[in-house]
Image 1 (cartoon, rainbow, N blue to C red):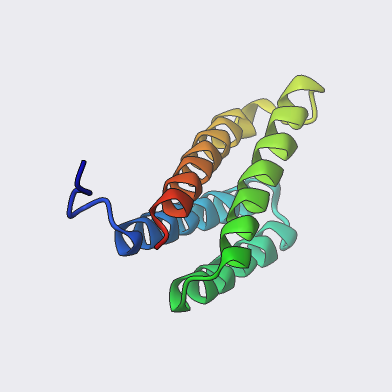
Image 2: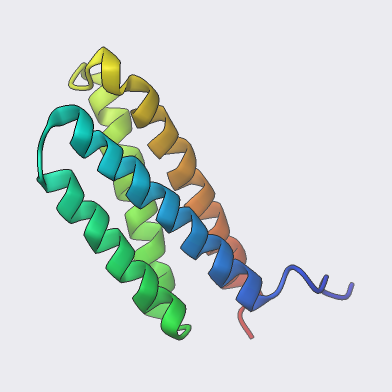
Length: 115
């Protein structure tokens, strides 16, 4: 079965970069809601990593994507389960979980498309 032209290595790099951008925006929004600069620093870290990730493909960068996705899921899901997430942040927490799942799926697809 031939690979579809849109399901290439470069497509998945772009897809994962796009999801990282949405995750950074979501974290920045959390920073506005909780009036803290820490989420903004984390969002900046996501954006810096996005540019490193898009610069050239390497296996460690895919491992970092899986780590970022797993950490985001565990952090926000744990916050929801244990009641640390306030009601005004609940939608942002679920958004982050869904985006992190998309990132993990994109990282897996990128891993499978590597030459």
